[in-house]
Image (cartoon, rainbow, N blue to C red; front, side, top):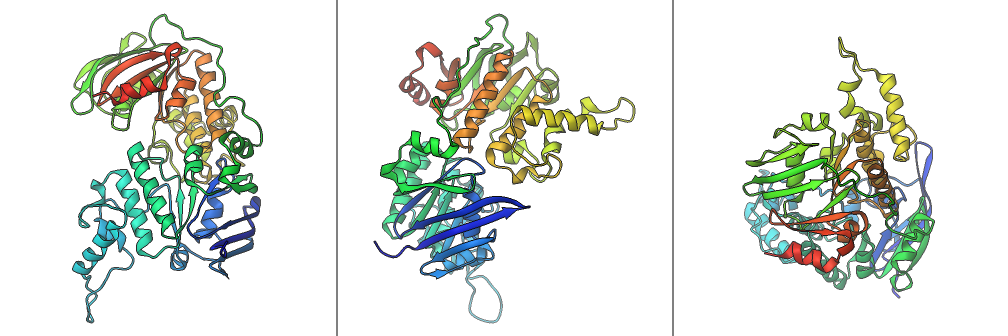
Length: 502
């Protein structure tokens, strides 16, 4: 085999005295795809951030195309031919496609004046978009594009800089199945062109499908580096978490209480969003909501919680009607809502873990006269909630939420709602973007909640997850309910047919 394009040896890194990488090493050749897997916090992102110039290594050696490198920033990494496509895309929705592509290197007209050569920029952008079969005018505002199309623009941006190594970090998190397939086709094409690819994903089936080789990290160390043919999903999971998980979904011994409904929705309609939605959610029940992206699942959740309005219908909690667009009253009546966008809507990323946990409960823990916050009381409660959901952090007061892994960030969102002691939970994609070990812990928390009598509305794009966790599944398509399925009759094919039914 030819000389490796990338060789990492004995890589070490510490943050605030805590070792996060220990003797990490890997190799990648041109025209091959390397899968990088591990739990959140295993060291995947840190390793790639060092390679991409975002962090600097403490020790070890990185060779790229036969020479040692140590990029000090992302610009230096890009100049070497290393492109990093993050889970959160580095694009500007208010700018056009062509402006995003050439933001830091606009083609200039000849002469002394620094004018942008718009015609040349458009021609180059159109040619670049053709590389990924994206037939859209380069002058189109990026904000008009679907998420999958934005991902392709990010790839075009990398190719326009003549990238020889492209790192994909959880690229399918916000994509539909069709958009994911399109991305996989592009990755195969890039491999055929001799471009090396590092593919990071918690969807292990995709890793096995796409990758030639797989490196597994655990606790900042490489625990396996093997050809894909030598690994299977069960072994990868065991390597990632350091133990065998006999069941992906924990067993639950409790059953729903079929007396009066905790949450009742009747005839809920909002033009262009949902139409004539009716269902009951009982205490001790997990009601799953299945459907394709755009089916109205998240829109329904936002309406029920009071974030968005509706034209007709009724929402009732314990038999008493809940007024529309009233999230404060929903919270006071025991409703909690975990949004699918935990980074944008669920957390204050720069604030501490403690401040995030206590935020929704501040009014209940203020003095009655001047409304001074009882900080010590809240701090103790925050600590209890963090322990209950097993948040792994050195300091709740000093660590910003942005420094946590995705799984621990999701636990912070759960902890902040648990502090309010709600009885009804709306969970919108609660395990999106977190590893298999963290998923298992979230599942155990859900089982504990319903075991204590809470009611859970569970929205997920993963049918296997709903089958493993739900007592019933409500299938939605184009804003309407297409049917209910009981646990005794769960069938993946039937659920898919209902979701695709026109």
